Structures are given as structure tokens and as C-alpha cells.
Length: 198
Image (cartoon, rainbow, N blue to C red; front, side, top):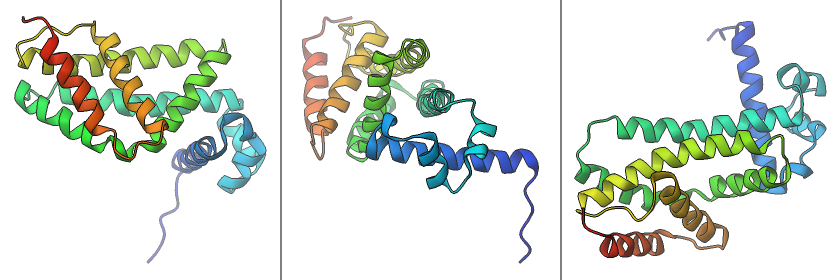
């Protein structure tokens, strides 16, 4: 079988993807500050020059990695919200999503790392928080639909509701809970039961 030769743009995208994946792995294993440009490039199988032909700095890689990481979630939530599913189907979907959180340990670690960097780095923080806000707004809309389906008003605005949900999920995962779904559903159901009627 003859291998198709990649074009320049395709080849650059393959390199970028490998650098993203390697940087993500290193951040999860060692933390962002322990992952130098040299180490990222070396573990990805590239030269330092290849790194700098794709990213202007480690901060640039971090920003693009964050956009990529958050954008996947935003797009997924936006697709779900635009799908025309009934509120009952969305409610089942959210419960199914909560059940899969036990598989999201890597995402929770990466997001915790990004949050710590955002707290310490004034240049990075507005980029992270803008994406986090957009992500939270989309997730909050979904959770609000679940409340409305139960005939209740959500106790918080969309983004604040989602941030509370995310903090609970990520906090439980980072505390070593193997499956945080039970606690999350318990809290969510309690909030729905005690919420004001529509």
C-alpha cells in the first residue's frame, strides 16, 4: 500500500496535534510549569525549532490548547441545545453525561491546571475566563431546561448554575471519587426539588 504524502498544511496540523497531545499529557502528569518547551518538543518527537514554527511561545501553546479544549465542549453543548430534543430527552442526556464523568479525570486535571495558571497569569486569565464563561453559559442553558422540565425556576443564572455544577463535578473527581455521579445527581435533584415553581 502506497502512503499518501501529506501536504504542507496537513503535515503542520499533524505536528501541531502531536505537540498539543504531548503538552496535554505532560500537564496532566507533571503540571504546566514542569513541562518546558524542550521537553514538550522532545517527547513529541520534534526539534525545538519545530515547536517554534508552530507556536510563538509556551504561553501561545497554552492559549491555543485551552481554546481547543474548551471549544470541543462548547460545540458539543451548542449542538445538543440546537438539536430540537424535547426537555425530557435533554434531561435523560444530562443524566447520561453525569454518569460518564467518572471517565473525565484527565479533563478535570487539565481544567484545574488551567484555572491555576489563569489565577497566576494576568495575560492568560482573560482568555481562559472568556472561554470558561461561554462554556458555562451553554451548559447552564441545558441545566435550566432540566429545571424548567420539572416545572421549576433555576436558583441561579445560567453561567453561575453551570459553574456550581462544574466545581462540584471537578472537585469530587480531584478528591479521588471514582464515580461522582451519585453525589452530583443528589445535589442537582435536591436543588430542583427545593427550587421555586415556574
